[in-house]
Length: 576
Image (cartoon, rainbow, N blue to C red; front, side, top):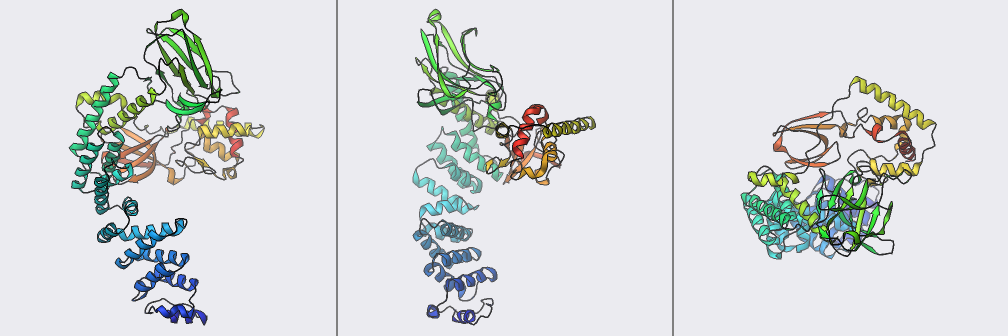
């Protein structure tokens, strides 16, 4: 070290540090932090030396200032050594909680050391539990899975989904058997716990344990039994995905309450989803009031009256009807039912608008409480759990149970799109030219264009950090120019980046699917189909895969966006 210090003082270039001895008297030579950091950086590049690999790097971590500690942590991460584990754990335990950069570097160094099974056991024996749990969930090793299982055994909880998934993916067969036994005993009715374990096993590609399938079967039969027993719950009627959920909204009197809403932001394109939510039968009171919010199409267009709340008798005959106020804030509605008081009736919340925006409604504060908004939540959770179990058991459940679960199976990936014919190509060329010409003489409403982007494009595309990343992010899109934008929106298959080419897969059951390959997780691929829905497909179920230079983006915006809306959208994009 003193030789390095003298080399620095004399202006000579530092050479690789092989052979230099560490001397604690070096501080007397006033080696600066910059000297120390440069030597550590050389250590990262050239590897351990006889002395620096031990004492020098350890001294930098234990005795240096924050910047030196950071360089030492990076050096230890680059060249793991058993001698570094104890000082890494000690430094991390005493590290300033506000020094996030150093803490992160130390955690990465510990993780890198723990890839060695013996070093992981050393850390598990001497390190703080919370840290080792965090490190273990990032280690793709059977030792990490075994540690997490023992931790699960000791804390008596059902376990976080991330940890359960990790144990299932990387655990040895005996570890997985123990995991299923513990989880099914502690949380026999928690379908999300079961799903986390199933997801990990799916990614590992192993055969699903019979104990797990038996647990799933029992859970499904129990939930289906509740479907029959709890006739008083709300019932969803529709062919597609249930859009209804509970969410907080404000009422005109200032109260903020839970609302049954058809605008479920957890779903893809929620406003396009439709269906009916029907209550159980009840005796009509003399008067019935409730609070209603929602829309009937774009505010600047006539009300389409596709969304409404209605009261029907047992035969379905219409008795009362209320339209949403075209407002996000709930307004009070009151019906005079004196003429039918005591008659058996049902309330139905109807979302019949499949538009891309301003196409939802919500209901709350039903008085008297002939039906309860709060009961919807348990019913929605039950149906969500049945959809999960239907996916797990679709090939293994007994035939009678498979039939009962068929209604809850998730939709299959969308089929591959048909190639564009020569005639369709001519039509697209003409449409692109017409829309570009219309834009040249128009005065676009950029505010409406932003709304259109949010409702039509933001599911897949991101601008300014807002939106999805299924497709390319679009910051600076105005640089493409109007003509290219018209092409990209109306004919997305014309210019497709290779990263976003369509993957077409054929599966063992004879079905075909197509989509953008978002990622691979062990023995599972995640496919985003042409409808924007994400699907996890086991590699073992795929018999053929092809890549074609087509886009996941549907070539339908020429039909779904009229000329004015298209101009508004392009107008806003040209400001980005």
